Amino acid sequence: MVDHVDRENVNQVVDPGKGVPVDGPGFELPLLLFGGFRTLIDRLHTRLATEGHPDMRPAHGFAMQAVGARGATASDIGRRLGVSKQAAGKTVDRLLALGYAERADDPADARRKLVHLTPRGRDALARSAAIFDELRAEWAATLGADRVRDMEAALRNVVPAETAFRLDATSWLGTP
Image (cartoon, rainbow, N blue to C red):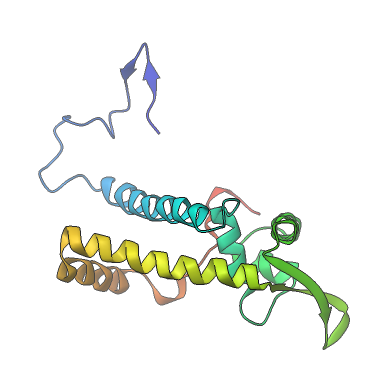
């Protein structure tokens, strides 16, 4: 994000001390939101590694969420993630290799294969949920429970319901 020329930071937008208002410049909000997201995800995966899931990556968690409780085809997973069927298939193949998922015939259509989470996959998601609760509690301890609740409520007010839980961030970078 920051360009360096001869060890000098030349990105005028994110250089501190360039006349930034006390409330912060507008561009800072999405960067801080993303930084908060990244901090939570990185800490989650550090913890998951110590709890028996060292090979789990953020893409795996998103894909496992896309599989859902009833299973999904690779096409369904790709659509839910906003990636191609081929990209979803690669992630599914990795989940299969790691023991987080398995393929089975679709009882409604023998031509289709459904991806289901294994007990290991469900364990990873259950641990993730518990760790997220702990990380949220840490934020509440640092910022105050009321501030965290207010922050969540404020974000619910400005984030449209139809995009609140969209996982297809890759669509920002071009057509999948």
